[in-house]
Image 1 (cartoon, rainbow, N blue to C red):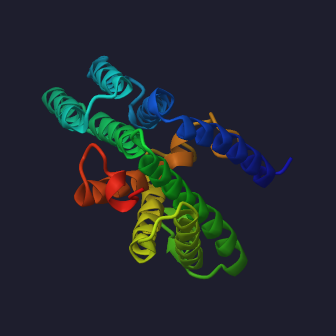
Image 2: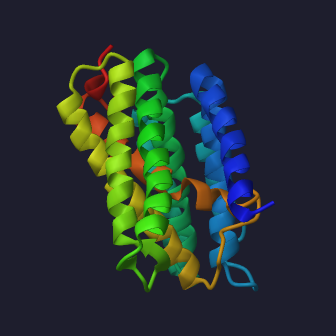
Length: 271
């Protein structure tokens, strides 16, 4: 079996599981977000921590458990957002005092914001469901079109020092594919503000590709090819969701501005 075939099979299986939990929403989806946050932090620290340990003991893990408990319990944004700030600040202060470096604090920020953004975007209503499906459509189409357009067209590299395989043609193809997929999803869901959502889809596609490059930089910074080995053909969970979590945070911020921190989907996807 070729690597491409393995990637496709893994992607289909993951998509079915993810879409099923997204459809259910509520506790099942929050559990998915919690597991994702935990695995992201595990893979991050596995890459970034020196072999002799971090010098922080189990403090980062304990703080992550507190956040995950709050996330699963379904606490409001007014509790979750300050909790993220406290968790990250406490880890950063401990690392500064013990001169242990700030990679654990950065990893906690990355993991907690990822889980929080997705959980609050989904919310419990149909607007939240459409918001998450719109996010998936844009990010997954961006990934697929960037891969195939980049391979077919080639041309100048996008960021050769960070990710040598990515091309500018692939980035452009991914952006176009993301916009088209997002608009098709929005139209199918009966959302009327397609011009605005087209711009949102473009922004999410760009952010998703930037998130992909960021994770590539982190791996290169620590001499890793993949963040882990959990997903056949893809590497780790971070390798699969790097663009998704970046775009989720961007969509959450946009939704927060247009509506509220607790119900960000209702501003962009009124149903």
